[in-house]
Amino acid sequence: MVVVFRRYRPGDEVGIVGLLRTCFRSYGVWGLTVDDWVSYESSDYGFRRDLALVAEEGGKIVGHVQLVVRRLRVGVAYVDTGGIANVSTHPEYRRRGIATSLMKLALEVCRKFGLALSSLLTEYGSAGYRVYRSLGYADTFTFYEFVGARDRVERALDVLSGGPDLEFEELDEERIEEVARVYDIWSSRFSGMVWRPLEYWRARVLEKTFYHSFLYDERDSGVRVVALDGGRVVGYALGLVASRMRRGVWPREEGVVLEVAAIDGRYLRSVLREVLRRLIAEDVRVVRLFVPYVPELSDVLDMFERFSGSVYMDYVIDQYKLCKQLEPELRRRVEEVGLAVSTSIDLCSPYGCARIDIDKGYVEILPSTVPASNKVHLSRDGITRLIYGVYSFSDVLLRSEVEFLSCDKAALRVLHTLFPRRIVYISQIDTW
Image 1 (tube, rainbow, N blue to C red):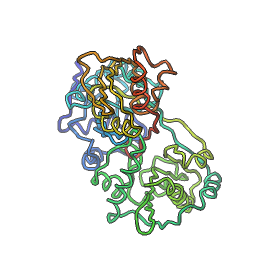
Image 2 (cartoon, helix red, strand yellow):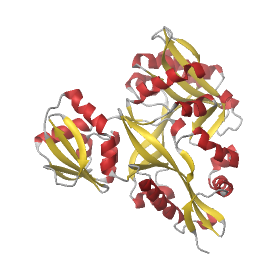
Image 3 (cartoon, rainbow, N blue to C red):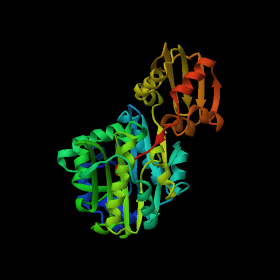
Image 4 (cartoon, rainbow, N blue to C red):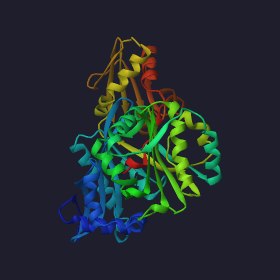
């Protein structure tokens, strides 16, 4: 029989859920149901049934990819990406190119929806990884986590003592808008953090405890801490107590710090201390922290073991559109240093080109239709790492990610200004 590749039709959810439970141990242990799968539309603005892609043979769903639309923050700018999730092929149908064909269809759908990027998470070097590289996906960065046994956590609590005298309370509907504003301030420091409307906060943080991709537990398993200074919300933390979980995939002796955030670095240590204190009070034996390695916390995080996780990969669908969406942040960077020069640069990669025009310090991104006076051509890994800030422009030069360079001194100065290093971080709550 012929395998047909298509988008979702009503009734496909039964076959999709069966396939996911067959292919992913986590879904089997968690107990994914059709009702769960259908409910994702109400808890995640990026999940839509019509963005489910399937491979079908004789009425049987034998392959699946889910597109999840995300808005990723890079400073003050947002980039639209088509997140790739749940790439799966039935064991009896593997090595027939089904995953590759589904991924090609996914990229076509992303183009149709006008998305600048396609992004995914996978295990480095896995069979899936090799498929994605063959299609042109770049290695952008690697996720990490910090893990500590109880004695490490107790030592960390001692190190975190002191700091501002804050009040702490439980997050509820009354505080949700204030906490969302803290998140908006906090997320501007990073590349990769996801835009969260209020309904997303309510569904994934207040009503349930989402902790990774599509996996969640009931509200009672979560820890939701709000920090106040003089009655003003200045930070928050989100955690998870595995022993409270009804559909657990975590070992029951573990506690998890899913997220910490603050409007100012001086509050951050106190917020982390409070969520760790609450986890220890639940008699957890091991704590996992999915938090960014920021200067304010580096001494504490160095007390834990650091482990690498999934590799994050990107495919640039439209390089001009991607750079255009970054325009507000690029302008901010130039204005911040007062760089009043005028020049033009073609920024190119295997994905395409975009023209950076700067006129007395004002940055504008244009289609690269007429050759600019300067040009730089980067590798596919080089362009995605430069965009997110995994590499600065100096880094791509030093790491041989530049395939062609013809720039005068003014253009080089602009490139060094536009592309500094940044901390890249995506919360576990928002992964796909």
